[in-house]
Amino acid sequence: MKICPVSTAKDLRSFFVISKEVYQDNPFYRATETDLVRKLVKGRTVFHSHASVKPYLITKGGKPFGRFALIQDRKLPDYVQIAFFEALPGLPNLAEQILSQVRLAEPQGRKFVIGLSGHLNYSAGMLLNHFDQAPVFGLPYTPAYYPDYFSQFQLRTMLSYRFPSQPFYEFMQDSDQAPDLGGITVRTLNKSRFKEEIGIYTALNNACFAQHPFWADRTVEEDLELFNPFRPLLREEYFLFAEYRGKPIGFLLWYPDFNELVQGQEQLNPLHIIKHRLRDPITTFRLTQIAVLPEHRISKATLALILQMIPPIKKAGYQFGEGGFIFEDNSPCLNMTAKFLQRGTGNILEPYRRYGMFEGEL
Figure 1: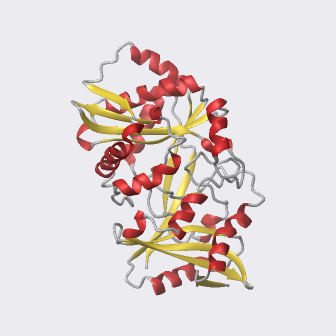
Figure 2: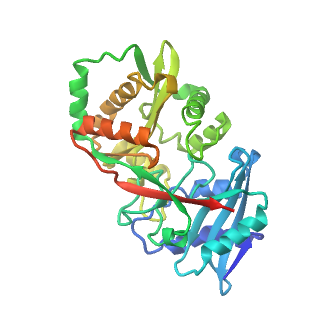
Figure 3: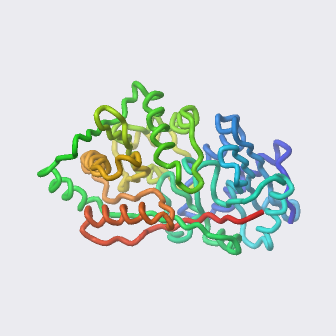
């Protein structure tokens, strides 16, 4: 087995083709994140203005068997990221050989993390359970044997919750009887002012997640680059802003599970968008992000955002919702989420999907 930097156009083609080999017989995989990986590995993005991305191929007998990229981000200087990992099974001592490349390529690196792909807003984590189900759009899917490759390293576990929608509709009806939100109002995204709105989102993100594990501050240009390809899919009610006395204090981002529109290696395309608009067959929505400025977290901003989200998901008839990931050691966020879900559904819910990132010292 050899690990070599990608140095030719043929190598780069092999880098992207390997994922098709890994998932070719897997009915649960969805390739809707492929374009983002291509952009970060191949293209010149705003992210590249402060980060280097070095792709590598893993070969065996001259045949590509895997890939990864080393990312060194000046905004997250303590870590070398081992990102976009994909590999066929049965590669002995793979982790140590990858670390040898890391030490050679990034001799100043102090720590490494496996499973962070540039930024938490892009992709993070390897799947640890529910390998027999397709992922919700924007959340990762990886084979069951991936964690075994890195089991000797420290595991950082992330959790997501899945919940039925119907109890939330009833919760909204009960809350409508006493809608005092302490002066907090909620509005939807104004797509005619898209750049300015994304600027508000970026500022809130940076302020709300400053102490979050692996967080690196974003720029408006980076978030525009991330959201622009999805503008045809993005309806104004998917993006909510909470305001107090005219000042943005929080936001909520949700959207339908667009992975239900595609199969396997398919990419989202205009036909899928038309299908979604004319006859929405999607059964699940994803509550991607919800965040409130620290000084307003004891307010009713979170409640106000959720109440504003419920009418459009009820109108669309989504049967289930699934949240974004929460780090298992983030007890305050987990407790708040568990209480909200218990209040909204009337039941104590256990975490549904589990994801993991692996880290260690170099």
